[in-house]
Length: 370
Image 1: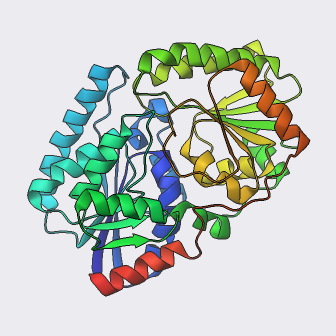
Image 2: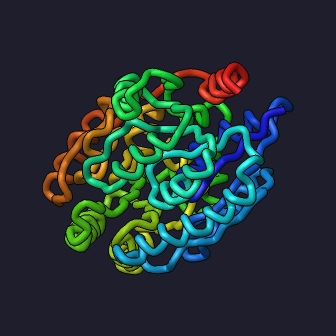
């Protein structure tokens, strides 16, 4: 039996991990441990640790290190505190795991991994080699890549970039996007079930909105929030379903402006901290299109035949399918793009991130390598 741990710090990475977690749970060859930290333990962000437990997983370790603020100083302090907490954790558990999975590019994930370097913790990184020029996450993602022993990437271009970073072709596996395995295993809710759970009627034309702050120029988030709020209030032919932003620098600017919109729109616009993977993918399936700057629009939406209006620079540099329509945070351009989508509602192309049986492939590779 191989001892494998999963580092999960947010609702976003947990949703991507889910097919892999299920695969580990069903395979007696692996002893799975979940290490939860970051916004999972934050009541302000919905305390999404409960979702992990509700899905039937045991959380072996909980490490609390998030601050409530989102200033640059608060983010840096959170990184320092997370690294400090994980320094003690890795000291006490450095011989407990044959492999530790980490995912993506979050600053708290970077801190947890960085603290493990001096203990020679064997990390496996998912979604390395990607590029997001509108966010400081590039630095964190590439640093996590350099700290990792195994690399499970989402497409060939990202495999090449990882190879350049680590100056080797060793242990790089182009497996596609793990989150797309959810499309095969996750039970999508009916419109009636979604209404019963969230109070939103998906029979009405719906825009699914997720906007995270741009962290390269965080001062621009004020203008972005106001411009998008004005645009959404004017879209009276649509109901708007907003999932609130993650814990990044100046994320509260966008959050607080969005939280005013339900009252301003007579509840035509609704805000949710967390829909969960099942709820979110159900909303994606039945919505008219996606609007915002989230990676789920870049990676998953094409597999639901959905167009994505991708705003600003946060996702600039990431590989995209042809369903992604890139424009700035400008009302006129957003309205023009919506009109274009209305002429051809369904995206009929392919998804550059899609490969079959990703979780199964990861387990097969691990059985050969560990």
